[in-house]
Structure formats: structure tokens, C-alpha cells
Amino acid sequence: MRSAKTMLPADGSSGPAHIEAAHSHPAPPAPVSKPGRQRSFIDRAMTPRAPISARASVIAGLSVWAVILLVWSALTYGGIMPDIFLPSPTAVIQRAIEMFGDGTIWPNIWSSVQVILLGFIISSVVAVPLGLLMGTYKIVQSALEPMVNFIRYLPVTAFVPLFILWIGLGLSQRVAIIIFGTFFQQLVMIMDVVAAVPEDMLNASYTLGSSRRDVLTHVLLPAARPGIIDTLRITMGWAWTYLVVAELVAASSGLGFMSMQAMRGFQVDKIFLAIGIIGLLGLITDTFFRLLRAKFAGWAA
Image (tube, rainbow, N blue to C red; front, side, top):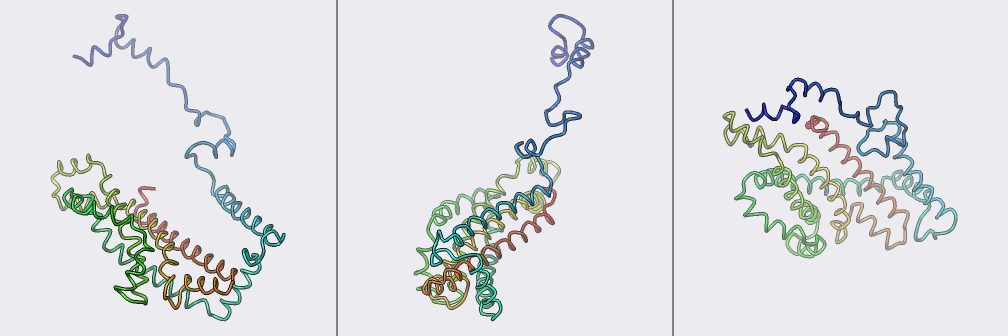
């Protein structure tokens, strides 16, 4: 009865007439769907979340790199910055040809990749299930979150002497630094991703007769899968940033070790080469996680 009254107009006219009057005043069309209007590139680029073509995306990305290369060339070839502080692109390329040609750079690349992969895999294998439990069960979250939030703010560099003292020098010490730098961040981020799964989904599953285990394995985990992959992708980037810290002390190989050696000999082009390779390897791992997300969580794109 209440809904029937709300359908009647205030002037006492009949309901169908009121509905017809309402349909005679349609809502104005959205600006993005005006018929016959050709939107310009600037219009699309300045509209929040409006898609752009693949060609425009590639041109935008290459333009930024072109500007960086142009500024770098102007500073070095123009004599504004001395070679001892900023090498020219030609000097870095020549150094790369020399080190790849004689094979001296491959052991350093392999050593760094080994440290990153071991540290990241060990950290993720523990952090993913534990973060899932923290985001699912309040008792686990209450027990671990205060400790995790305390430790994750501690600087990794402060633990380098302790890891040397406890573990000794070598691969284990470098891997431990990568684990310490990524594990606690992964834990908090995965916990937040799982906790953000809508409560309505869980209630609907219980209403349909699902058990607690079913809700955990068939609702929470699939719903959190895109966020978990994004977390792994982000923390993999952090792992690469900790690489130089891990290889800073008492390492005998690796890109960070190569940079430290080059610094002692004022070989700035060699430092730039090591930085460039780290960035390239990071880009490769980032692309791997993008493809992984597209394959296993493409529905969330």
C-alpha cells in the first residue's frame, strides 16, 4: 500500500498518467555518448579513465624515454657534466659491449638473479598462506598484526651486521636480507587484500550451504587472487631495490658488488651499466607478473 501511494502524483492525477509524464522527460545523455561527436585525442587523454589507443600508449612511453636520452646527451656531449660524474650514453654502451663480449658480467647477473629469486620465493611461500589466514581469522590477525606492524618499519640496513653475525658471509646472508625486506610488507598487503573481500559474498556462500573450508578455498582465495598477484608484483620490485644493500658488504659477485667495485675505481659508466641491468631485470619480472595476472585473474582486469 505504501509503494502504491508513492506512485501517485501530488496533484491527484492517475498513476499511469504520472508515469507517462515521467517518461516524457528523459535524462540528458552523458557527454561521452553524444551521437555524431568525434572526440579528439586531447579530449580522451584528459578524461579520467578514458581508454586510449595502443599506438598512443606506445608513443607516450617512447616520448618519455626520448626526453630522458635527450637531456642525458645534452648534459654529457655538451660538456655540462664531467665524465667522472655522468658518463655519456656512448661510454655506457661501449662498457656493455666490452663486458658482455668478454663474459665478465654474466656471473654477476646470475649471482644477483639467484639472490632475488631465492629470497622472494621463500618469502612468498610463507607470506601468502599466512597473510590469507590473517585476513580471514580475526584471532590470527590480532595475534600477529602488532608484531608485524612493528617489524616492517625497521630499516633493512640496520640488520645487515646482525645477519653477518648470525648467518655469516655468503649467499644465505644476502638471501636473508631480501626475505627480511619483503616478507613483512607482503604479509600486511595480502592480509588487507583478503580482508577487503565483500562480506556479502561470504554470507551468500553460507546461505547456499558452503562450509568454512569451502568459503576459504572457493570464495576468499579466488576473490583475493588478483590482489595477491598485484602484491607479489609490487614486492618483487622492492626486492630488486634491496639487492644492492644485500650485496653491499662482503659479497664477491653480483651487480651490487660490481657497482661497489666500480665506485672505488671511479668507473661511473660501469655503475650506470649495473643500474641499467637491474632496471631491465626488474622490468622482465614485472612483465612476468602482468602476464600471470592476465592468465589467472583476467576477469578482474
